Amino acid sequence: MEILVMIGQLVLGLSLLVGLHEFGHFAFAKLFKIKVTKFYIFFDFLFPLPNVLNFSLLKKKVGETEYGIGWFPLGGYVAIHGMVDETQDADALAGPPQPDEFRSKPAWQRLLVMLGGIIMNVITGIAIFTALTFKYGENYLPASEAKYGVVPNGLGRQIGLRAGDKIVKINGRPFSEFDEVRSADVILGSHAFYTVERNGQLMDINIPANFMDRLAKQGDSIFVEARTPFTVKRVVGGTPAAKAGLQAGDAVTAVGNMPTPYFDRLQAALRLNAGKTTTLAVERAGQKLTLPITVNQDGRIGFEPLPALHYSQRHYSLLGSVPQGTSQAFGIIGAQAKAFGKIIRREASASESLGGPVEIAQQYGGQWDWLRFWLLTGSLSMVLAFMNLLPIPALDGGHVVFLLYEMILRRKPSDAFLENAQRVGTALILMLMLYVIVLKPILKHF
Image (cartoon, rainbow, N blue to C red):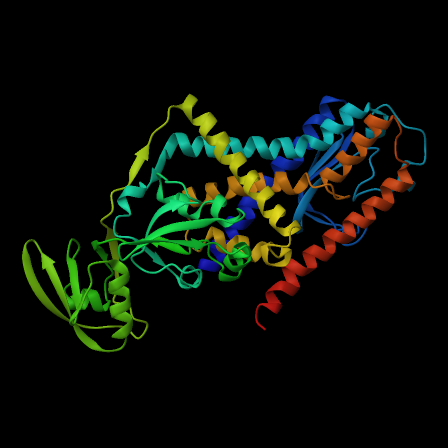
């Protein structure tokens, strides 16, 4: 069931983003009276072969345009009359330009048509983050609340963090929110470092230049969390915790003779007692109880913790949500630019940084959570805008480069040149898709 939920969220998210991206091209083409013969979410052919396996799941012709949903779920397209793209080559444009063709329009109009998809994705990203900011505000943990220190996972420990460390500065500066510990300035910055307090002493911990790669291999962006006291929020029925009589509101203070003032200490104590019978020391309504319990083989007992840290929240008016949502949206593009900078400087591996449909589906998760769905979809919209702006033939950015060349030098590249550039760009994209979708998952198992 979880796999179906992942696939459902992935298909819905990509359908929205691809449809809105292609609508951006479509809207500007219609604005400038350019004929559009097809508008498809996903391809109705085996990309990049426009005459192979031509069929659609759904289609309807309205006026001069056929609207449809294709069977090949890796993108989408609008067939703009008189333009060299994945649906037509230079041979189809052998005659003189017609008034309703893309190639007959002024360069500035063609530029806006090509930028239309990117513009639409940016608008979509801003709209999603603005709406989420208005509805939910911002929930954050003040840095001062992380007074019990941090809990690193394996990667966090590899870079030198230890349980109980208190991070007091990031890159030599104090910070106000705990999330800044995992910000792009840390993960993607050059020469980033923490200043931590450990056993009353201050020390600097440097963030490795290849940290982004190591995060990608881990498959999880969380490498350090705030250490927290806890109580029991909910007990799962039929589990060891339920059989032992643990209740919501209980504070588990020890497992056997091991004190558990923090949740990470409880997890460690349970792992040491995996598959064994032990006791839980519990405080309940001012009383101290001892509950016998048999821990599962995986070191779990079956309850949901309630962290005892005090989170703060900011609320915004609709008008105030717009600049905040815009800042969040463009922050994603900034992070993408930093990531590419690290790849260019060879501080990160392009192959490790790339993710395909499987990785995206895993980020959506196996439980349908609308907040997470819209956060990820808004983020993907901005990533899609950034990726499409890259100056690669066959992407919107490649067409933009050729149009800027024409506008600056007053000389248009030939249709044959554009066709060859389209082929090169398509080949690059196909190789990238082959690696991300087929080879990378296979190589992960070796």
